[in-house]
Length: 310
Image (cartoon, rainbow, N blue to C red):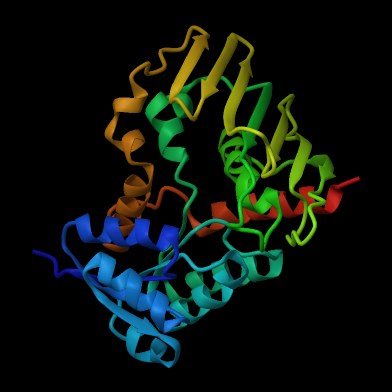
C-alpha cells in the first residue's frame, strides 16, 4: 500500500475550511494542519477541523512536513504562496484565479514544470460539464451565452469580478473552444457606494471570438439583486440551456446528455472531485481536473477582458 500523502491548507478562510474537510475525508491522507498569517485565524480554523494550526514565522516548519498543499489565501497572494510551496518541493492545488497577473501565472506554471510537480487549479465546474456529457458532444458550439451574477459581498474584493466570478465561465468556454480567444471586447460598471473599495470592475459584459465560427458572451456581476448562474449553448444541431444554481438543463439537441447529471458523484461534489483528481495526479494516476497550464489560459483571458473595458 502506498504511504499516506501529507496534506495541508494555506488560508483559514471559508474556502480553506472547505478544503480542510475534503482532506479529512480523503483516503490515504495525513492531514497535517492549516496555516494562516494570523495566529488566531489559524487556531480557530484548525480547532474546527480537528488539526494543528500554524501561523506567521512557522511557515518553514509547516511546509517542510508536506507532500501536497491547497492554497486558499486571498487571490492577490496566490502566486507568492504557490511559488514558496513549489520551491519547497510540494505539489500544489490553488484556488482560482491561478494568479492576478500574466507574469506570475506564467512563473508558477514554469516553476511546477521545472520541479516536476503537479500544479492544479480550482476550476471545479468542469466536473458538472463532464457529468452532463457536454465534453462528449461531437459538435463544436457556435455560440455561448453565460450569466454569473452574485449579490453584494465583502469577499474577494482584491480582484475584479472577472477574476472572481466570470473566470469560471471563461474556463468552461475555453474547454469547449479548445483554443484561446482571438478577440475580446468588454464594458464595465462599478459600485459607487460610499466607503466601498474594490479592485476592478464590479460588473462586466464581454464578447469573445474564439474563431472557427464560435463566439461567446459573458456577463458577471457582484452587485446584482439576486444570484443567477445560467448558460446557453448553441450548436449547429440545437441548443442546451443550463441552470447551474438549480442543477437543471433543457436539451434541444439530438445528443444524449445526462438528465440526471446532478446525481452523479462528480457533480454532487465538484470540489471533492477536483481535490480527488489532484491527489490521484500526485500519485501518478491521471491528471488534475484543471491543470496550471489550463488555468493560465483562463487567467489570461480574464485579464484581457479587464484591459478591454470601454
